[in-house]
Image (tube, rainbow, N blue to C red):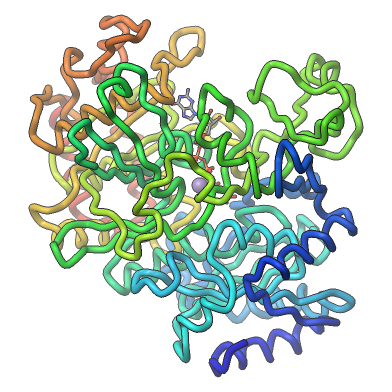
Length: 590
Ligand code: GTP
Ligand code: SPV
Ligand code: MN
């Protein structure tokens, strides 16, 4: 398949280590993939779904102890512990290799080693990067085929270059105690053992495109971010591109594919999806910030996805999609999850694999689908996929939006006073935890730029890199905003309707980028005048809007104390600009 000496040498080493019975190069051909699907169906690894209703679709159930990313077992193995920083778990590289090789040695025996050459970003684009993942899981091969560009063309584009990421995945025994997701940023290497779940094993995604790539970006002058990319087309045809960073399961996929409310649609507004999870950002020849989506598909949260909340995501899952840990509807061999509709299937297999009466099972308060069950759907399936999705140059970004789940404190939207203030706004992001990672759900934690679990180096140095990017962008820097769709009332209900109606907030953001509207200056930044958020056609009062635009200085004073405490973690690697911004906030609050 290749004469690249660096690849051949690594594969030689890996073959000796893992001792596979058989080696298969994944060439990307449909014939090879189809043979693998058949094989995985025969072994029970995947289940073929109803060919009429869901053509080319499959269901997979992971082990019950293996259903989400495991942040406690995710490590950044930089040579110097200090370079991993206070927000990452760290293991010394020699120790980690030793430990992981002990766990993995010989574990491909009796199995096949699949070699997947893949590209993050369109093959051949100067902004794309290649990786090789070896795995003993057909599920991984099939998912990587949807989520990345795979096969021979990747090797041809790479040529003799050594600029590719090594990825070793081995299922081993899916033993939680021996599960490790380790990154060696200085070696361009990722090793993942004892898991078979999504973000832990699709090594192109969080492991490469965020953890390794964020480190590469710092060294090479670009950024890898946990951001969706969307384009808003105005009635005159002008498209404004926005990136938005929200923590896991906080609404990126939903926002990236939103359907404009009727009042906007009728005027001719359209929204185009470029990406739903990851952005690679560079300064273009015109001095602006440009973004590509390095992925080729969506690994989206299934529960809550329905014809009303996200019809585009639902449509994307109608063919050639792999479902993980959703419920199996035996009546017609389709799938179901909480929030798809109000009719749990009677004859069902729940996500753990038991045959149940789904109606009774649900009525007893059980979940048929795991809260972090997912669909892996090709981006080309999405009805609103942008014409720029495959463009090697990406799209120019006018605004960066941060956001999270905050029941109180954060208003619906506010704008930073400058790029530097915007970096501060990103650095103080906080959000309630979700089922996307193992651990407690609903606990507020600081998640700077939604990168807490994904930054591959010291977070202080990461912020410094943000300031440097801003200095290089100067006047052409995107404007920075913060949004919160999740303010709740006293009964805990979400106040803002959200979903498609979030376009009403994006509309204000676009106007602010164009200098088309005034705003109210508050202690935390610019907040809209209630009259400037269009609530036409919405059953939502101006008073309610004013309520969620309010900046409660009491809550923010408490917030400022929390930020100060958070910042102490970073010691002398905390950029001075952040402390200066915190002092400004405190001053504004007095
Ligand atoms: P990852 O794939 O884990 O990175 O998640 P994500 O950020 O793409 O989140 P996603 O869009 O899948 O949304 C996760 C959950 O948030 C779903 O249950 C949605 O129904 C819910 N959600 C998304 N947007 C909104 C919104 O505007 N309002 C409310 N109330 N809920 C929302
Ligand atoms: C996330 O948790 O942010 C995801 C899913 O997008 S995973 O690929 O598992 O990280
Ligand atoms: Mn994500």
